[in-house]
Image (cartoon, rainbow, N blue to C red):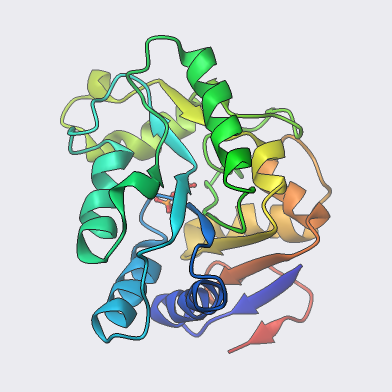
Length: 248
Ligand code: PGA
């Protein structure tokens, strides 16, 4: 696990973007796992800047998003499909045929989850997976207590996650309570994992994930078992770490 501490949010985003861009340049048909949320926005902005500057193309990149809310159509402004469209896809030369996001309106959710797993395999597995971390230590929607070997499935969101998400919805009862999420086992099979965290409200979760014991109560702590993981932080998210790490 390589922990890299950027000077600030923009520095962290640039570090992450340089890794993603390098992998795409080396393998134009990279299978790239994507995350939503506020944390990767700077990374996506940086990738868009590289595309617009002519130094990066997404035309052959295959993407798989980590998760999606159940019950929201893709066009809903809070769906992750909409988020990805607005914050990355529509600004770059992605081929829409290569975009994969779980379908929150699937009739048979179990069958859909199985299809999603098979589809990842059909493309040769995820080369690089971007993940965020919740204040409660979750990765994707794998909340504390999730099996460390779990696969793509339906999950009930924790109360904390529902409260964290409340700011995005007009009314409390509009906030989805269920999601489809890649499992921890699915994420761990990615050849490389890039975990991003910024700001002080993630400092406890980062301390637990990076320097605490590996436990299902802090799902992100499984990253300690990954053979090729990067944890890219800003100074605030790194504030509670006690070991020495690379400062950029
Ligand atoms: P955030 O969410 O990037 O909006 O903080 C990350 C997460 O909950 O995984």
